[in-house]
Length: 496
Figure 1: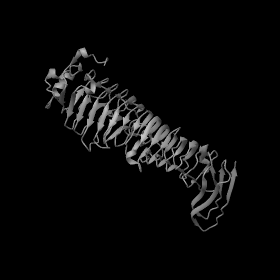
Figure 2: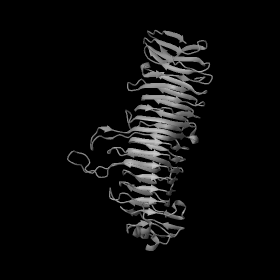
Figure 3: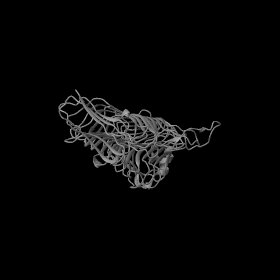
Figure 4: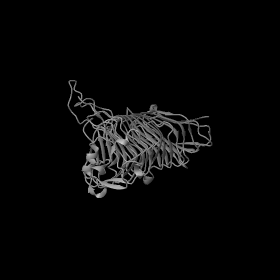
């Protein structure tokens, strides 16, 4: 580790540490840290009992030679942080490298707080107190790097291995009504970690009175946490590449936008989750094959917005639902995402512009379910370059057909032995089954339906476009029709 000058290091043993796992070595460790030199234990194997928080300031670095396999371990059995970087923007560029920490209490294990350029690497950290909601590692300062660590979280799904935050402790304002000493979290990295245990993996969020983190990088992490894989509440530009989210429950990725005040004290809320670029990730919930969700959009905190301008080019596999988008999501592009071993590939309810383009695997029970919910702000929805699975069905409910665009869709069947269902609801709606089916299409039933008509004039047009003109039958049905002045016209035509 070239940045830490080991020839100018100190050993906690020189300050009275015992390393027997019984004696509290907190005071000896703090004395070693206070020298400002690199704390470098040199007589492994040892177990240091640390039951008081060790305060780290600028220039205080910890390095265990040999990394996680060197036989040195720190154990904390009380409800205090093991390491806490002091103050607010007072202890920048602190590095912790090669530690093995076992924390048995209810506290953040390593708390970087709001300090810039801090780094945690090559460490093994475990938290074992079941029911604790504290994260293992917490930071909210810019240029923080959490990488090459093994983080074992056995605290339960309310706790995260890594908490990337942005909040404002200093509430004093300047003459313009802005924070006089704004805290920022930009260009932070959580890369190349192994995350495991019964808890959750990573959360990115901010308080409601402070702008969101910007430029967060979450790349190449391997997670088999049994809680949430990645929870994102507020971020502006998130690079999410090459991660493995496996065993997660109930969601691999949970988008839960939380808006923040446009200006301190203002009632105007803005922000949320924007510009998330997701590529090459493995997204899977094999522990919950019925109801587990690969990408869950939760609009409970921001029903009319907060999740936009994001793209996903990922592999969804062995999930109950691949994606679930609610109203308030807008400009979401699934590029060339692939779905295999999922019960339902897409569930889209009243979201804004959504582009579904790419591959859908063979064993999805339903390829997609899309309903514009009659919302003025829904859509448009684009479907193109899709290869539907043998067992996959397709249901599209169009209250406003002008919001739907269909490109080439290939696949022998829309739904194994059954039907592709395109429901068109409202005045003068029509269904357009797209051209481009491979082999002999199985379009045995195209359903053009409505749920309830009360004295309305309704015209329904069903139009099928297919290379095969011989095996198409249209059934027109409804569930409830209230007597009244009803006119129903059905036109079917076939084009080669």
